[in-house]
Structures are given as structure tokens and as C-alpha cells.
Image (cartoon, rainbow, N blue to C red; front, side, top):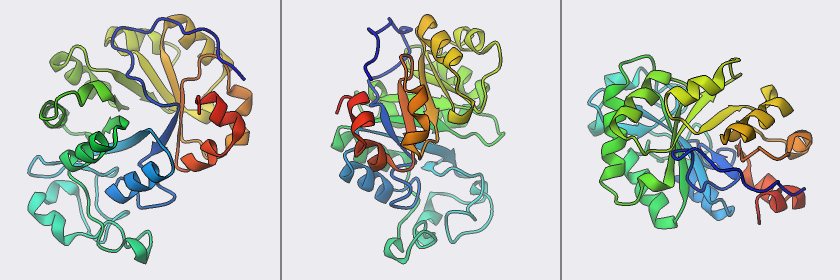
Length: 263
């Protein structure tokens, strides 16, 4: 299925993210939000990865989805109770498989260096976990600014409108995406108010109307988290710009989806 001619995007809408995006890295092949997951994504042929960034108690930005360590490491308690010096003692891989024992929670700079070296683009999701987003915003921007050209390879997203507003105030040209499980009726107005040019939404809430509205408004629209290529085929229509998936290889090996992604 071919897409319609490109619609002009919002000036800060997008970087050239690939249409098949590895969720938290290739997170069915390796522990999520680790460098191992990024390497697995690269090995699968992925060109864009999605990952989560949270702050430790000392202000260090790290790749971690939850506010607490418990689910994806052998540590216990909130991220806010530890600092960078504690990371060496926390295993973020053995919970997934003994093959990944010793994998660490990456600091944001480490992840950006790996992605930059591999020539990948990224969707960086900010996770303020209900706290003041300003320290997280400053840490994210500092990490990108320390690597010339990196900001132009990244779309920064969040469910937290305050975090996106804070980042927009500091970085007027940064590509941003608003995350919704299900967009409210006034989603276009909310994105416009913050100069946000991309909508990322739960795939089960996606309708042809969302796709048509996004395309008419020049908004990039991507869906998460899609692990069944066959189930989404009816919505592989003009206006869909990307799928965020735990199993990117499953999409890249599907001839229809590979063609849709320009592979």
C-alpha cells in the first residue's frame, strides 16, 4: 500500500524517524531500556529506537521506565533514592535472562553515544514521574547539547504536557511529540498551543478519523505498542507515520510492512 504525497509538516514537527521504531530498544530480544536492547535493535536492522528517560536522586538522567527499580532490576525502591555511584551495583539484565546478567542501567549520555555512533534516530520519552519536570528537561537538553547534531536526530515525547512546555520554552526548535493513550477531542489545539508537531497514541484507540485529522493538520502520527503486524493492516493508511513495537524484526520481515517503511 502506498502513501499519499507528503503533507507539509509543522516546522518543529519531526526529524526523519524511520517508520518501524523499536520500543525501549528491541525489548523482546533483550532487557528494555538497556544498551543490549539497542544493540539487538541495530542487529535487527532498526534505524530508530524509542526509550524512556528518568532522573536519579542526584539528578543523573538514566534510561528507565518506572519510578522504582523493582520491576526491571535486582534493586529495590525509588530511583530518587539512588545516584550515579549506585548504578554499578544494580543488575538490569538478569531479570530478563541469565544471558544478560550484569547489564546496567545506562546513563543517557551512554545511550546517545551508542545511537550516534550507529547513525540512528530516536524517540526520547521524558518520565518526570509526577515531580517538577524542569530538572529532567535541563538534564535531557544538556546531554543532547553536549553532542553536536544529536538534537536534530531526536523527537522528545511525554505524556506530561508540563514537561513538554518546559522543554519548548528552553528549546524552541526541538521536535516534540505528545503522548496519549487516547487523544482528547481537542488534541490538535493542545498540540498547537505548545508548537508540537507529532502525536503518539495507543494503537487500539486509532481511527481513520485520527489519521485524516493528523494529515490535514500536518501532524506526524505514530502508534504504540504494536506487536501484531496483521492486526494493524486495516489502518496502514495515509497519515500513519510510524509504529512503535517491541518486535521490530516481525515488521521488517513482513513484505507489506517493509514496503510501507520503504525497505
